[in-house]
Image 1 (tube, one colour):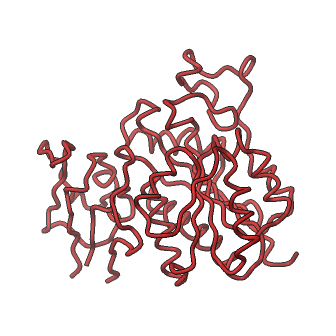
Image 2 (spheres, each protein chain N blue to C red):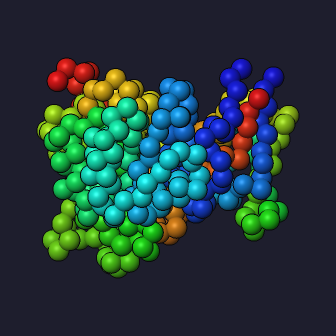
Image 3 (cartoon, rainbow over the protein chains, first blue to last red):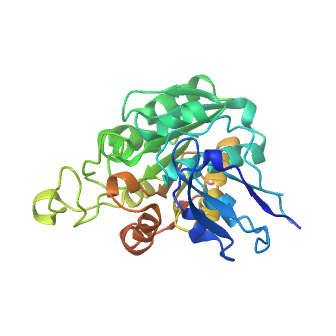
Length: 65
Length: 246
């Protein structure tokens, strides 16, 4: 089954993916990446690979395969 | 299951602020072009302002014209290189205020280009000044500190209603506030490139996009503002579709 993967180095901390995920599988973290933006984490147990995060992300963080 | 991968035409991260709609629009353009197999023959025209970030981000031949004149630049390129796919990516300030003449006459001439207008209701890169055509009544900007007032500052105008009357091939407005509308916007943009490939006429696609930095909102609240306020004034949908019958 397809799952989402996140390259959080590209993340800019906008949280649009957290809003879009129908399964609430994306968890906002306080951890920051190299650029100083707060990143996210994907709960692989809940992810159904629907691609909503890929579609809403402005910074191409997600890959679903 | 469908596979979602970043298009190959995106070669670098864009420099936009977090939550900016420009990143989504760049991806939709790259996906549409790759699905139609046109990536080797694209000449992209970008205007001065935040649309310039696609110069670094997208792997196409680019030209940045004088501010507001991008429809004329694209017209010129299409006239001398009719075999190329030419698209113009511009903001609402340049297309509807500073360069309204150029946009109008590209539409009147019915040049087969694809024009994508990013409507974020503000002059974003210069710090968030009021846009005469697209800032909503009551919105606070750098140049309307107490909110836009109808009596002194006029009212927002639906420019696609005007462009519709010029007998263009395709005019539509999309939005980015949820995945359904992002998919719809992608269909519009792809249709714009298909019209150009088939040499049908001028296609313009306006996209309601957030500017969280200058709206002084959280990116998520900015999307909610588009859904609850901007879409009421600027309805989403197809305004005209001639279907190739000139």
